[in-house]
Length: 75
Image (cartoon, rainbow, N blue to C red; front, side, top):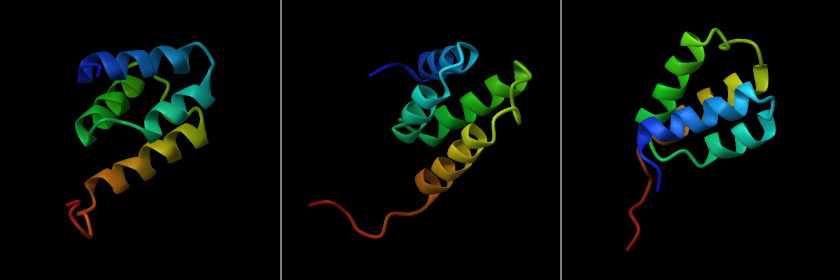
């Protein structure tokens, strides 16, 4: 598994390369909330935040899903 700082950089490279579908797929399997927040700050620093609605919505949705408490524990 990639380190958190590497993950955000790799997803940012996908976004800069114009491959939003692959970036959204990676966002859906993000390792943690910390990684998603690092991606958000990287997008803001690169002035790419707000350019693609689907990408921003995917980040917000997955932040909410990863931040929510789990309803049950796995055995």
